[in-house]
Amino acid sequence: MLHTLMSSPWQCDYNLLLRMLGADDDLLLMQDGVLAGLQNNCLLPQLLQAPARLWALKADVDARGLAAQISSKITVIDYNDFVMLTVKQQQQMPW
Figure (cartoon, rainbow, N blue to C red):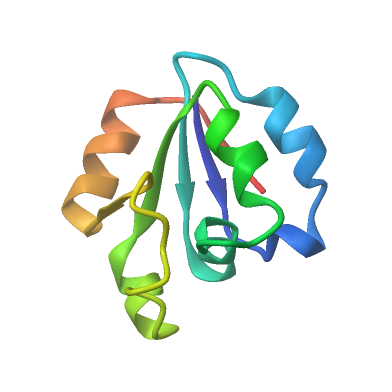
């Protein structure tokens, strides 16, 4: 399943999101969801322990001026890669 975190991790049920992630899942941080991927934030350690693959949308990271602050353990991708994720994971869950 492709999970897309579009809202700030402080404005959603972040703990439920983490519990829902499985080993075959992908989590894409986009819009304000990219805040979850910031280095040295209190939510990042839990996110990095999740079994899912972690991605962040480059356009949203850049739009917020956060390129230098995103954890190196999260892969930053473009819209073409986002499309590939949607093809790979036909089920999606927005957060």
